[in-house]
Amino acid sequence: MSAKNGAIKLVAGNSNPALAQAIAGWLELPLTKAVVRRFADMEIFVEIQENVRGSDVYILQSTSYPANDHLMELLIITDALRRASARRITAVVPYFGYARQDRKSGSRTPISAKLVANLITHAGADRVMTLDLHAMQIQGFFDIPTDNLFASPVMVRDIKDRFDLAKVMVVSPDVGGVVRARGLAKRINTPLAIIDKRRERPGESEVMNVIGDVAGYTCILVDDIIDSGGTLVNAADALLAHGAKDVYAYITHGVLSGGAVTRVTSSRLKELVITDSIQPTEAVRNAPNIRTLSIASLIAEAIGRTAAEESVSSLFD
Image 1 (tube, rainbow, N blue to C red):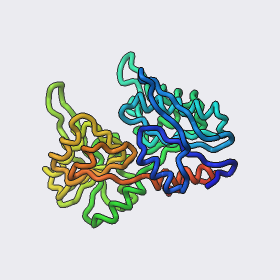
Image 2 (cartoon, rainbow, N blue to C red; image 1 turned 60 degrees about the vertical axis):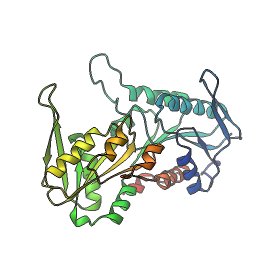
Image 3 (cartoon, rainbow, N blue to C red; image 1 turned 30 degrees about the vertical axis):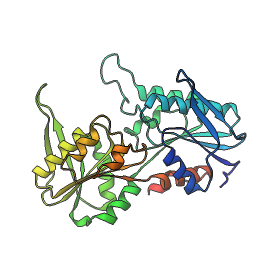
Image 4 (cartoon, rainbow, N blue to C red; image 1 turned 180 degrees about the vertical axis):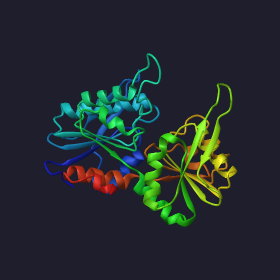
């Protein structure tokens, strides 16, 4: 495949080699030969081993755990490509770390998402492509074009294949995720419920109120990130207590830190479905009620359209 002006090159960091190979397979392109390794003191060294002068280059790199290492890899790869005279550099970041730090949460706290956006821009990226940003306004943190892709088409196909939609209800696990859940519910033409979680006073357990009649429905919780898994597990319990038949969850980014996998496997969740925006750990791969959907075809299509100067937003119409 060629771009409108110059060849397409794909360069992968170390964050998710399996996803990078899958994207390359969909585009029928080889990954550009590159070395991304560590010195003895853990400094990162990058060498692009092919000519990229005048090329349209896409760096495939999530800023997942270890977030700081993978972020530095992305920045150094970008700098190496800029100094090698790549025509255009697009940072393809399926999971954008630090996205939850998108505002001042208290006095004298940073807005780290803005800082990371500045770092990527000043390293030399011309464009950013990411997936299901935690907060849509993060697009405005960048001074370069930023495409926020959505995993919903992949999830919608899977849901339609597996469920009787007449008996399904989409549920937002908190008030902040209502827009995302409403969008999915509209795509599959199902009703919507919301979980309102609150802690009346410090030291008391969290109370979850279900807004909507979920009795008899198969409930599908929808969110962008699952980290510790506590909120999701508690939401499943609340829905079942209100008469839900079964509870599933479709989450874009499976951070699943600490004891999250154990928490999910021992919960009453029928199944947790995540994408491979973050490379699944062995524990995730072996979990009986966690399943992974590939987003390689979605990202590959977006890269192809960007290279050909075609519409990306029409992917989600």
